[in-house]
Image: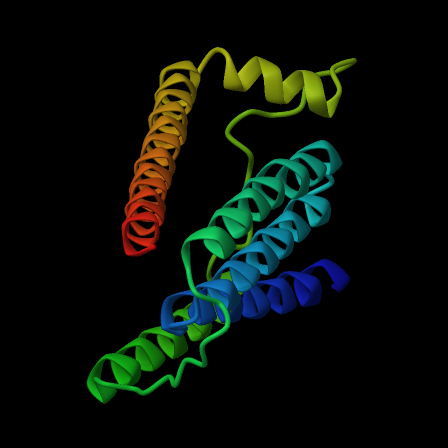
Length: 184
């Protein structure tokens, strides 16, 4: 019974955090909410007795979001105030209705399906971490490698964008220094 209550609490908190990510216009608020949402997702793993995956979720994804947070602080002007206005009330109402329907469906799901079995049953003398490795590198090897390639491309793209912005900033500073020298 406690697992069900914890699941619903983590579900509501996770959806709420990701709602803040989508609705917020302040980049730092959105990234903070994204980190919080990832931490709440790790709660699902702890409920399922997958402590290793829960810790990996916290360390990897929240660490990556904190790196994104650092980039956000460098690229965005965090000192200006952002006034958030709801431009399209229809979108907010539609998302609210969809969220309400999903919550009702989630609450009714245990009544409909009483027996849920894992697709990979637990093996004897094989721990949680070994099962993760076994499944990850057999059934899900190709998606795992594709995700790794996508993350690599995203990392290289971020570095290229950061270097271009730095080059532009340095060029502007050099122009200002030349103008000051000519002005003297």
